[in-house]
Image 1 (tube, rainbow, N blue to C red):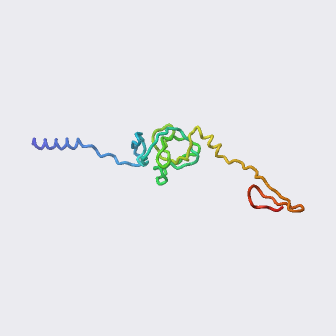
Image 2: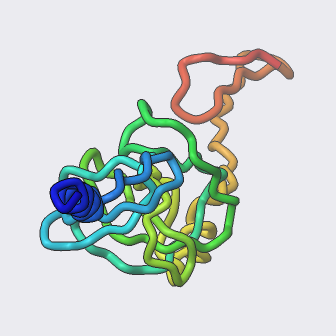
Image 3: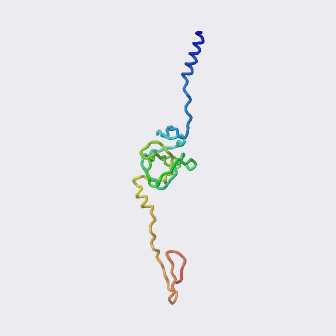
Length: 163
């Protein structure tokens, strides 16, 4: 009887010392990764960058850009940036892409191309410089070809038009 009790107690203590299996990782499970000495918290679905240079600035979107799970166009689209809306740039990663987060957040949500946004303080200036500039009227050269007729050409073209 004592031996049965001892073996039962030993089996219970052995099983009690075991850790339960870790829950399966889903796309929404939060994980952390360290790249170049910086710890990034992100969803499991978002790939860890190979290189990371911290920026930690607020930027504004220049167009409705797709936020990707990896720093290239081969990843999946996680969400979209809205034109003119601010977002947090955590850092620059490989292939000239930006690792981004929501404003005032530290969790990496994905990656956008470098040209998808601009630093918030330069946003208005960038929009002003991007507007189409009115063309100057090209100089018209005219020559009399006899009587009331004349031939004209605009600018540096070789095409003459007879009037």
